[in-house]
Image (cartoon, rainbow, N blue to C red; front, side, top):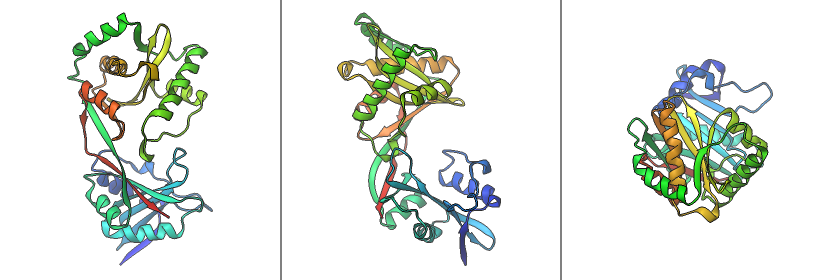
Length: 298
């Protein structure tokens, strides 16, 4: 007989194992990733316990500031416990939300089976891709770099001490990307102010820009994660697209990452963003399993 109850601190090791196994080791979770709800607050994570052993877990919490009307459901462990866990979560769900979203990779079989059977809609698809930087060769992109240089384009890494005018231009370009790039809930970033973007770039990321006659016209961002770097936030000014500017800029950034000792690069996005998918294919990224965003109206 399974017993459902709120997550307790003593469950952290078991839940870490279940969640890591559920994502097939794509990410590794430790007990430190899981915290018991504070007294007086609604627990966002439940567990299913059988004979004193935690066999499944579910978390229902706001999806994020970028998707303010949605809750996100994450499940792991024994698939037979997912429906009771979902019903228990929905019975205590906070108000003000109109839908529940779930995100899973297409080879996470137990989650895929559950979301389909529970009446969720396969609403959006996203791709992830990886590049082996130990074999990345920037030489094929040198002719493109030379042609663009002769036309006035110069790629480079943005200094953390760049003048305010550069940060203003960078934020305007960031906003252009937010407005123009196809997105789905999973690929929608949380809103950033100008100062928030600057703080993130200074603390966590490296920004690479292309200047045309001194003006910033393209941006891509790299986030170091151990031996890997994640690429995101790539955008080109409307008047400079379809010229290979982003391909050349990302090749420049990846060459920097390679020289800094990183061995792999990761990226991704919605399947609707075909221009960026083409850019990454040219650079040699290999597309992984598809990510599915499931939706259920409340």
